[in-house]
Amino acid sequence: MEREQGAGGQKRAPRAVVVGGGVAGLCAALELRGRGIDVTVLEAADRWGGCVGSHEVAGLTLDSGAESFATRTDGVKSLLGDLGLASEIVAPHPSGAWVQLPRGAEELPKAGILGIPSNPWDPEVRSALGLWGSLRASLDRYLPTRPPTDQASVAAVVRSRMGKRVLERLVAPVVGGVHSADPELLDIDMVAPGLRALMAERGSLAAAVAAQRERSAVRSGAKAGSAVAGIRGGMNRLVDALVERLADDGVTLLSGQRAERLDHSGETWHVGTAAADGAAQTFDAELVVVALGGPAAVELLSDAVPQLAGHEPVPGPEVKLVTLVLDKPELDARPRGTGVLVAPQSPGLQAKALTHATAKWSWLAEQAGPGTHVVRLSYGRAEDAGRPLDDGPETDDELFRAALADASILLTVPVAPEDVLGWDVVRWEGALPFATVGHRERVGEIRRLIAAQPGLAVVGGWAAGNGLASVVPDARKQAGELADHSV
Ligand SMILES: Cc1cc2nc3c(=O)[nH]c(=O)nc-3n(C[C@H](O)[C@H](O)[C@H](O)COP(=O)(O)OP(=O)(O)OC[C@H]3O[C@@H](n4cnc5c(N)ncnc54)[C@H](O)[C@@H]3O)c2cc1C
Image 1: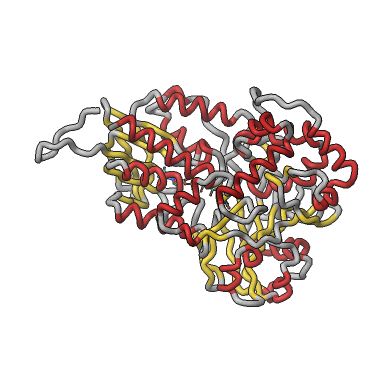
Image 2 (image 1 turned 45 degrees about the vertical axis):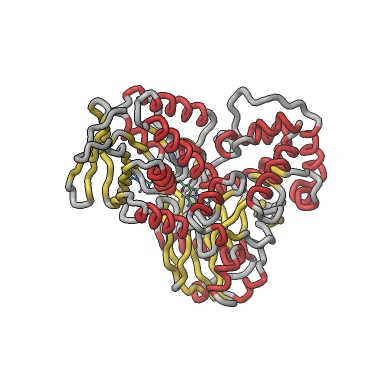
């Protein structure tokens, strides 16, 4: 790639524009800058981090979106190391989570992935499934396996290997809680990457889960049994550290700049933006990384890559999070461990998950002090094409009332308005990718079409897979490859 000469006759550094200042965009910027590229990041909102952010409730600074990361990959751990935060990585409390079934609450088996157990005869699994359920699940060991060649939903794989009870009692609540969607719809290769390949290698789904859990534990250095980790002070510290590093490294960070247009002339890309006051600007660069949600990314790229027509990903569901800070000493005993995932058919409950944040993270319990508790309930589940499954609570007041009622049932401790020291509702519209069956192939095709355009790449949760463990390493890899091809 030829570049005009600077005043001193030296070659000018290539320029890159990163569109979107979520974790994917910030990681891409870090990688590009590390390779000597002159980087500008454009973010539509007035804050950085996208789905990773903070809010203050009753004087406590809490995560408003993502609050942990999976240790399935070492992508987040190594990023935190690069940012000087390795010593701040913390494991959640080992008490684990519960699952609320129509017939009552059970401890969620600890050694699972997405609720899929590694041993159908673990006492917790046996208790949740009953004798017949465990017997059926253990058939998995005797069924033949083969390398995955076809597309499959989470539900299809779990049902065929381990039966309906594992699907309904363990997997549906976890998938609903984490991905806000029905396991019948989700592509297993997006939400549990590598699991089917491991199944072919190890001979059963249970053995694949055990192997993946073991690898996570070794990678994270966390205690066995913990598939996620967090940061002391909250995941939002990752964004602060990324932004600080990028600013120190000379990256131009522009918030309040919504990208609305992308085209090119020769080898130069032009990104047209509108600021909140309507002022328009154009940014020129040899490299562009689009780090938006799937539908927005494909829309922005559609003029430059017309072949993308018809490849628009389905928007994700609206997720609503209600955070309550409670004066409730009875919760010091962690009645439901670190939280509860709700099976879809559970009567009388509208929440799909509850995180007892002060039970999960000891740094937060210390900050809140004895008797003060943070619980976060989530609402909204995708049924089809991103539509919500049920009407559910909508307004802030409806959500607050539903959260009090649901928390009382789920935590087995009555929670009344007078126990509430503070509360907040955070809405995430379409922020979770809706990775329906075949998503991996569709993303592969989109990336092939984009790779045919010199200097262009897409990153983010919809392309890499939901969750920081997928987003971070993928964004760094894609941006690194883009830079390597350009210099
Ligand atoms: C409620 C919630 C809880 C979650 N919890 C966890 C968790 O505990 N652990 C975990 O690993 N993952 C979790 N996730 C998922 C994880 O947060 C995401 O996978 C990840 O943060 C996605 O990052 P991203 O950069 O791809 O996208 P985003 O974070 O969505 O960032 C995209 C950015 O692009 C900006 N933007 C949009 N349009 C434009 C435009 N036209 N021009 C410029 N900028 C634009 C947006 O404002 C946003 O900042 C959670 C997600 C949600 C929504």
